[in-house]
Amino acid sequence: MFVWSKLSASRWADAWEERFAGATDTTLVITSFPGRQTIRVEAYCTTQKRASAIQKQFGGSVRALKNQNWAAHASQAPPPLKVRETFVICTARTLAEVAKAKKAFPKREIIAVPADMAFGTGHHATTATVLRLLVDAAKPLQATGKTWSMADLGCGSGILAIAAAKLGATHVWGCDYDPQAVRIAKENSTRNDTPKVSFTQIDVLKWQPKRTWDIVAANIFHDVLEAAFPQLLSSVAPGGILMLSGILKSQAKDCLAAGKRAGFVVDKVITKGKWVTAMGHAQAARK
Image (tube, rainbow, N blue to C red):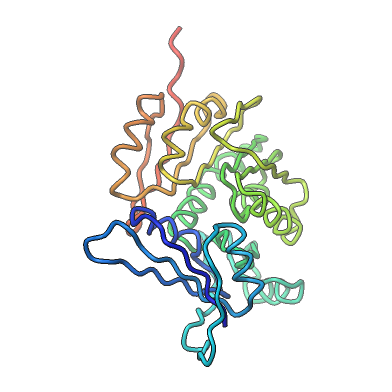
């Protein structure tokens, strides 16, 4: 077994937990030190390749652990996640595993997202909440037969964009700052038979939207949301919906206040555990 480790500011503990949520081949351990603002983040991995991939992405160091019982550390694959009456999210990787999931849940759409590089399988509270909001928002659009579009900002595994395509969105686009996330999102799109979804590597803080979308989802860290509100709001079509997540309860007041100053009108706030998700729209421009 191999372990990757890195020292980090304690304020990023929840962000590390979110990044590794749902990973089946990695066990995350965070150690805090009384009186210090530093934590030690460790990821126990079954293979050196996995540990080295994390090191390449986040820095830190990797060392081999001998005479360890990995079975005592290993995480179990998360169970299938049901989203309303519409989806089942599972970690199936192969076509055979996907077929097995479809047989087990014949009345639901399957979204298969293996826990590669810890980019999220949909089981984290933030992603699961946005998935439910997305299903709800798509229903009236499906009922009217209206064509609609969706943008997934900070796409990670691409799960939200994939879900939008399966819900009937005719134009779906996702982006992420991390090129590895973009690569995996593309793989997941192929795995889930949504090849028309496009993904691009983009820094949302430097992004200048050249079009708008009916639904925009941004499941990213609160400080990025606060800085990127002008771009986020300008990407929402008139009458469209903006979904925000990745916000801790302790951060929500300041984050949503920043959104309000930028013209974000909150229609709904959902708290799940220590995480907050907000849905709303862009304030109409004054004439």
